[in-house]
Image (cartoon, rainbow, N blue to C red; front, side, top):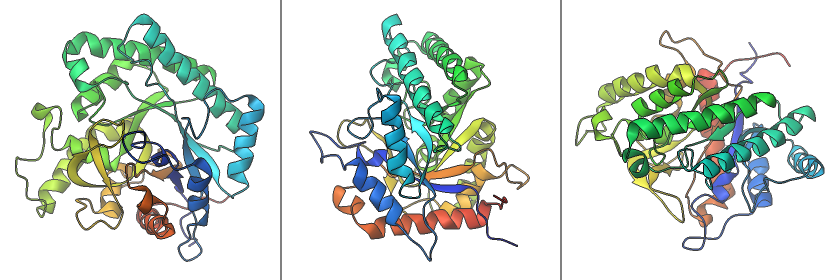
Length: 345
């Protein structure tokens, strides 16, 4: 039986930007992130691609079509494909003013245009466009019902634009985004959007925080002062969250978390991404990824063609070591060995 060749293994470029800035460390340039990804090697197995944040200083959202093709050449010349894209929607909150919400939708349109051009030239075989509410839980809590309606309305408009480009949108489940800051609110928001081309982006680091009820204590699943050595209780909690959100999941980030919140630079407090080898990590990455990659009967969902490592807010010293990315790739390979499949190409 041939070795699994799906899901494809991607690295994210935006950790070179997110959490960096004037009050933190300088960004790591795009070329360096690509080189570290392309150079990673574990027994001859390499990353298959990258997911891109369409964010300055890495990628200008206003690229011309020629610029998009040059971007594709830069990536594919390193034997990497392009997968999911992050739309830079933070200047226009999804529950903001009419003009702000219009700006949100326009950023999604620009991201979808880039995505379509990359698809058309064969550089992007699969992937989604990632969004969030660009609003805080505190802002959302001022008027939960109406704010959820506003977010859903903005997401609907964005979905309709994305459909014109043949794209799907994935809303990121992260505790720092209003209306998406708990697993229950995330489901409510997705249901309210009511569009076929929207889904959920699960990140193992962020969804672990859903179990602890940060920013939404009433939705906590694990008990206070939880003993992390109690794997049975943790597994039950993971099953509860994945049962609710797996049917929506169309994009997936492999990650580790130590059960705490963290933030650096201009990025709000969110789940602390940990290195794949961090001894304080609370997840058994390869095993726990299976809650998202398999259904309740243990069958592979094959709901997405690639998985991506997301490790934001590591220090530049850590991120520029090649061994860091070799260790991450080794973990990704374990996920594919345990929950992957083979397709003839």
